[in-house]
Image (cartoon, rainbow, N blue to C red; front, side):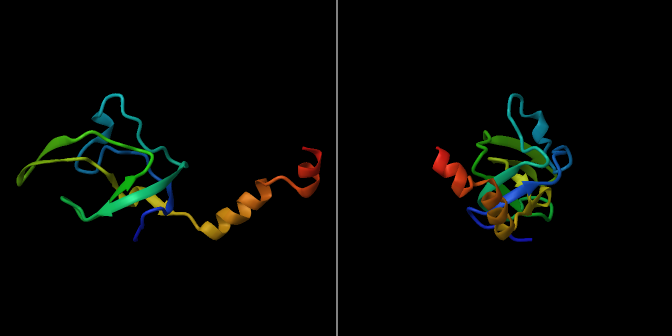
Amino acid sequence: MSFYPGQHVICINDDWSGDGFDLSELAGIDLPKKGLVYTVEHTEPPLTGVQFIVYLEEFSLPEVTISTEDGEISGIPGFGADHFRPLDETRLDIFRAHLAPSPKQKERA
């Protein structure tokens, strides 16, 4: 699955303990929550494992150092792409139209 900057995605899995680095160990850091919508900032190929890493506009994580079989890796952790699904912008536009005030509501304002 590919993601691109500016794309809206929904978090479908907020268990961050099994991605090679347990993000939940970052004390005081909010992490994406299942069911909420986020915006892709950019993606990067994986350093370990097979899934791409997604960076979100809504989160700025601190740089960390993790130990792997190949030694230590330092960097800013992202989120595993398999935790997210892209949102269909067409469906979002339909939803937004339902939330918009009707012409009668605009006249009353």
